[in-house]
Image (tube, rainbow, N blue to C red; front, side):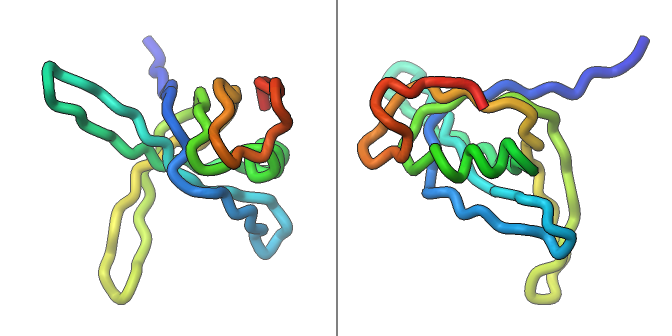
Length: 117
């Protein structure tokens, strides 16, 4: 039997998105999605790191802002990097699909523009 690496997250964007480009010119945007859970009287927030590439990155950066509710789908990826001489590990969702679910205050998309990227 094969394997499956698929992640689906619904939550709110944690910060405004900043579009960047790699040296080869590929568009990339990194952002976090806050997923809230409530158990009895305790509320917990799990932050999910996400990375979108190319056209998806461009559209996300154009229309998504802090607080906007989204559905994000993609694959889970773990990578290692070095910061200040310390090796670190980051686990993130490499985004293949984004759907705008709601409009937040200050969101960049026009009113009523709930749609799929």
